Structure formats: C-alpha cells, structure tokens
Image 1 (cartoon, helix red, strand yellow):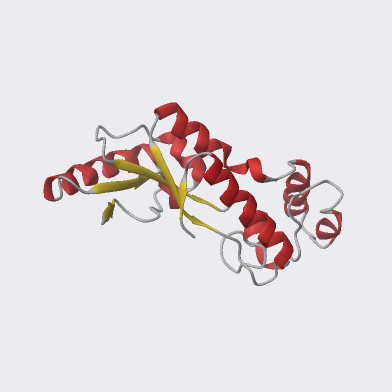
Image 2 (cartoon, helix red, strand yellow):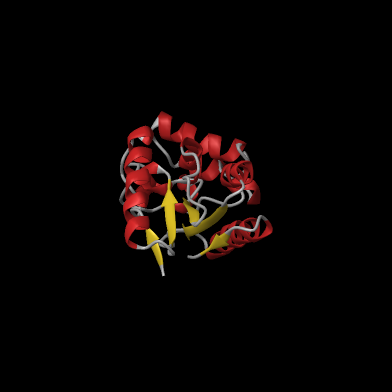
Length: 180
C-alpha cells in the first residue's frame, strides 16, 4: 500500500504546493513510518511540473507524473480543457508539418491554427517523456507515470496505438514504472 499526498493538485503556485506537499509527507510519515509515499508536481501532476520540486528528505518516496503530451493529440475531441480541442479530429501521430495540414485547414481561429502548426513542426514522437527522465536522473529518484493515455472518441486507432506504444516503450527504456 502506498500513500499519495494528493492526486492531481490543481494548485498553480508551485512553491506553495511544494510546502503543502512537504507538510503532508511529514504527516503521512508520522502515522505510517514504513509506507512508501507518492508525491507529484503541481497542476494535475503534469510531467513538466516535476521541474519545480526538489526531492523530499525521505528515502521512501516515489515521484509521480502524468503524461498526456501533446494535449492537442491526446485530448482531440475532448469537451474539457482548451476550447478548441472538441473541434479537432484525426490529428495524426507522430506529427510532421505535412501530415497536420488537413487538420490545420479545419481550425478557424488563428491562434489555435498556430497550435496545430507547432504540433507539426515539433515532430512529436517517442522522445516526448524527456523532461521527466532528465529530472529523475538528475535527482537519482524513483519515478512512476501513473496516468497516460489518449481520448479515444475521435482519434484514429492506429495513431492512438502508436502513441501508447511509444510512451510505454520510452518509460520502460528509462526504468520508469507506469500504470494506465
């Protein structure tokens, strides 16, 4: 059994969250001195939010992150989050400038069209989990990705399968535990 300080904190202030989480870990440790504690960055445990925390002074901790990057692909068709996601359909993975042109043509708003263009130019592929991998190696700590996936309502199954395979493979290659 593990204790998690809080699943998907919605706190946007990284420094405030770090203080709260450190106090929660102390309280957990007082009541459960042998149990492993799972901690995470602020803002829904996004992978890049690990960059704002340093390891706790406790050897029995696993650092958690969630991976849904790029949201433009993983959340296409979703009715929550960014207002334009629900209009996106059949966003390809991996991304190239050429293979996003049809999606880009369907996006009327210039700012959102730019987001699709950037997705194409960023050439998203299996190297996407780099930030968490780098952070874990820097601090020599255990990592787990306990959430990742793709909203399946409008995503092409073959693209979803490629993304899931790439993320799972990258996690395993880097010794990061995962759940889905």
